[in-house]
Image (cartoon, rainbow, N blue to C red; front, top):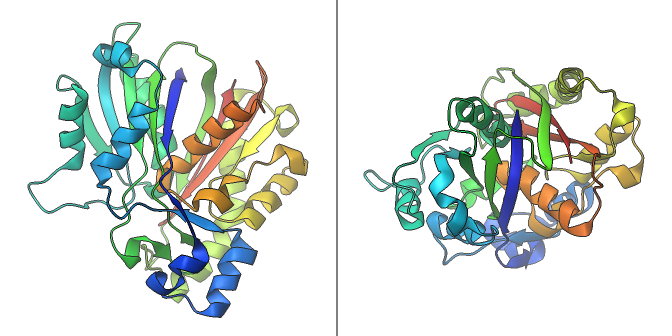
Length: 308
């Protein structure tokens, strides 16, 4: 049993994609494609902030974190870019010290790339089951985009720097993860800069692979698609997210894609940013079921079902 106790989000300045065109090396045709086809309009970006700064600001958005800090036993960092600082610098350890969490076990997970956020939720629940009843885990999601190679995945996504801090409990809370599934399929030549062969294979397996893990997550939750009230795809393509939702039989108003235009794709933070948005908007009622999906390059397909 894994539940979200609270979510803190930090969204840096939102810069028009038109203003980032030159720095990202986009042609006019590519710019139109990312805006009209993918749904990107603005990218959240803060050139002056370090990765630790961005994450700390998400923690600052948590309600009453200071009161909960002593209960945090694990700090989990899901990430896609494996290293962003030269040895021996470690922004995660710097942040742990700033937050006063020196007693918490701290580690990163990277093998599922942008799908690692949902894996962190599952893993946190397993770890917390071995602790006292009121223990918490802190998931720190989202990354600094250092250089053009991490600001754009050609033909896949524009990357932003929004971050999320998620407090997780093994007790029933208002957002309980009741079903989870993931599947990793090797895509030759894949990476943040994918080869043409990798892009082709990725596109071929995408829909069927994602549907398969959605079915598995729903089965684990003991639910069917008809039980779902809301679908939160990750922020990569508005068209793909809506198409997947409609394939599942959902109505347009049940598919949340608004943040794609506002933030761009923010690594494993997408799922938590989207959940914070629909909670703030009051789009979820007590007892509602919602589906969250995320895909990590490489490729990992992941889905989780929650009860609000």
